Image 1 (cartoon, rainbow, N blue to C red):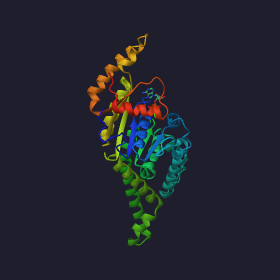
Image 2: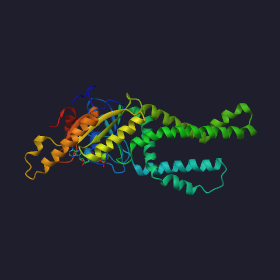
Image 3: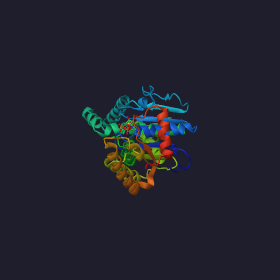
Image 4: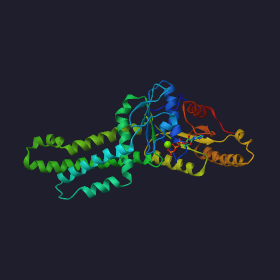
Length: 331
Ligand SMILES: Nc1ncnc2c1ncn2[C@@H]1O[C@H](COP(=O)(O)OP(=O)(O)OP(=O)(O)O)[C@@H](O)[C@H]1O
Ligand SMILES: [Mg+2]
């Protein structure tokens, strides 16, 4: 397999997507280890409600802080604590809403609105995306490569797509806030003082801050020299459909696609020793889907990973995966 440019971590920010359970965490781990082995300083960030980096590396990486992965000095991992994240995000939202009601002089109890805003299903995804942005514009600066292991359902692609909408929405919010302030201030403040006053407004400052974060993230995320989105599938019907849908979505947001890893692939040589015929049947089924992947997504395939008899845990197992991606061609 041609890994031109050498290695998998060929962009600063790498996202890994795919259906639940197909091997996203394993692939994210392989990409991170491969880049670290090449001497790059790497951050592997998990944003899953149930973390699996500790299990993957067989060491304690929990607690929500940046931790060195034992065995590779330039690999850092973080399992972002979703509950802390949600709580902070909720408080932030609460402050914003209260500020807004106060400012707009709406004499109403803000609690129900806070409830609605923070219990809707997009809230968790928004909070996670906020954290992704924070890592990208802050901590990410300190690393050569940042690999995001995002949740299976928290469809990271949609979140990134949302950033465009958020951007538009924020620009609009800032504008109307400015207009309203200007109108108000005109009554009490001299004209030349108006802009100065508007910039002191904490809501405008907050919105401008957010807008700045979104703009920076969007710029990075749509730049193929900075960001690559990888997908993982198994040779099965549903995971392939999920990847196809993701690729279409990602491309519609101008986010660069890095490629596809095809995981849990059986080789002809694996099946001969199974007297039940189960593996033979599975292998035949996989041939069908591998053909389909080749036909419809062939241009994106970056590598194949073997089906192993046990879970993939520890550096040695990850090295095998990296090796597979580089050279395994299933027959
Ligand atoms: N090629 C493989 N051979 C054998 N086991 C594998 C292979 N790839 C992944 N696994 C195992 O399958 C399980 C799921 O893999 P992984 O956790 O990487 O999937 P995921 O897509 O991240 O799942 P989730 O959607 O739950 O986050 C793990 O126990 C992992 O060790
Ligand atoms: Mg996972």
